[in-house]
Image (cartoon, rainbow, N blue to C red):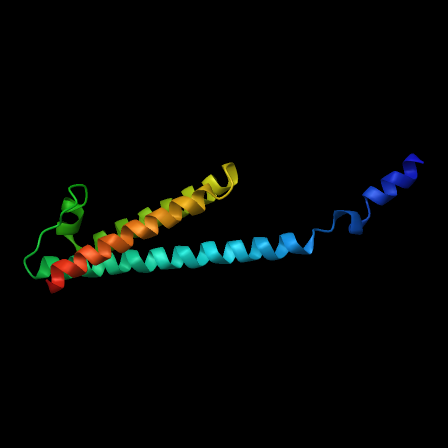
Length: 126
């Protein structure tokens, strides 16, 4: 009887994932990837609008970024890229520790950077 149960548990059908789990996982992963690309686009927009403001006599409002932004736009973009890589790593780790926690943080970050972009656009156009 034990041999029979071992054969069942070793069968590929026994270990086959449920189709609903596959589609949910792939959809969830696709949404996270889209959100990360959206955040990357917001970072690029932030750099572009900030550089435009600085070229037209404006100032950087973020005390942490003043030295970086005032030195060069390439350094500014590189720092934003490093921050984005750190965010991706943190989101991946957080989602592994607590399900969906990194995704929730990503949505909050996207909201924050949308606010930053609207602020920069307000400075430019108003």
